[in-house]
Length: 465
Image 1 (tube, rainbow, N blue to C red):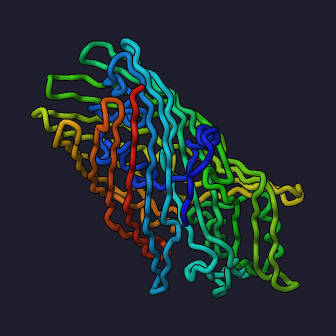
Image 2: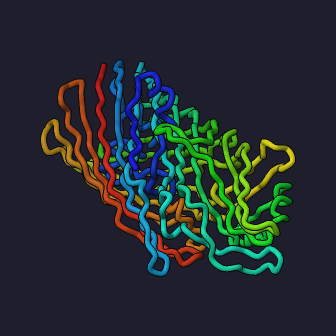
Image 3: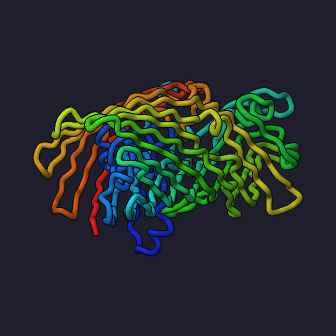
């Protein structure tokens, strides 16, 4: 699957922040901007250009006084996700995601300000309508409360896509020649597509409180089933920009840098947890299939879906940069991402258009763990205009094996990066980065082995006005 991002300039300005993404550290990208990405995702304590709005807004103060700068970027993310359950295998067709970015920054005196738009991260998989792993599931006998054998699922598409983007309004203040402060007010756009079958055994387990919960007046509709084969949740569109269910909100960032000496600079930042409204769509469907006293039956109900309490986590970052000579810079960062607060459960509510069906509340346990990421990077000035860069980052996997869902396989950990920056003229520079994410494997509670690797790249162009 290729998510294309060619659009008119007006639409780009409006929608760029919501472009679907695929992330590499949980749901975060390994680095923002080609320079930071090439240097292992570091960026707390040196000039990362306009990408500072996502790394540390205080570093915008490194801009030259009295100048303006525009930036354009494109990222390509290429996940490779495979599944294996007792010899039955499948691969996700979601193998290419393209994410543009745009920015404008201006420094006047001690103050630097601007606006930027980019995709922050997300997840996505696509197993199509012919996946052997999602072809059948265990039916559930509601009379005896026992498994009732294997039955066919819906035979429809199985896919997911989560995208989170930001339109950011940063400001930095050069408190002294050595100390800079920064902040950013962010408009956050989140969207989601979900096409998922849940077999009768898993549905019954969640109704009993195992791995989640299912409640609501719509459960009365299941009283007519002697056997439940599956339930299906379906809200999706074909937009390359934004998912079916959409929510808007805000976030804040704060940062500082301090130059300890001519060779050493330290920096830190705090990204607040977002405050997002429910992700909603009026065009969703919930279906149930099974056996009633009258025979085999499938019942589909249209209505509104609300994905509740979906938020982006708080992030703490700190770093150091060291310049042992005019040609070399070495940087190191540590980040702490508070996934446990926002990814404990996945919650959604379905409200039927027909009031006689009422509502259905579904909660699936996720119980993500907090994540610590260690990054290191180096830059070598090969010539006056050419900078060569390399780095790596190492992190923990935030997703517990027991609750790992093939639709949300955010299990990658380590990254190895490289790239370059080239000054084309006094006003124009380009940057490129490449990231290799080695394959990791995890086995979930259904004994499905999920493997995930990536190869990613980024291109940036900046022009001083």
